[in-house]
Length: 171
Image: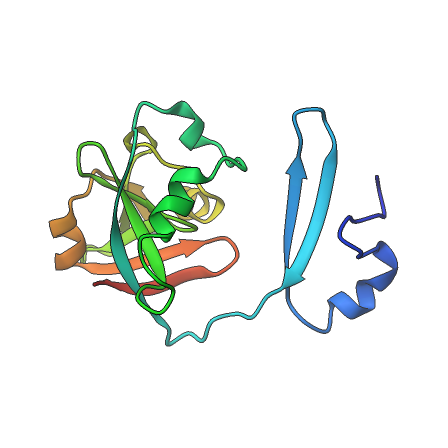
């Protein structure tokens, strides 16, 4: 419904929105209902380096649903649950072949010194991601199958459209 947002926020409060950053989520249900929710968002300092752990849970590269943003997040929640929040900032999922795919809330990028970031192909079993797609289209990233060795030998970044690129290190 134009001009109305779910979650208690309405179009009349746009002045309030401009005072502090918000995370906005639009959800489309199978029946066609749309819900828009907002939550406060605090951007990360540019000097942030995330600690990234590798999940025991594995993605199935044949699962086409992984290529779409859905509310079916069980595998991501399972992976996130493998580590307490104090132990890791993000958790990296591999597929059944052991190929690095994506984080629980981020896309994966590696800087190998070539000047172009590398990111896994969709066929590994991952979401295209808005940031990932933008970087590929801008030719700042290209698709390449990666190994855990690649991640240890290059500069690791995790990112999404909300947070941008975040420097990271495997733990």
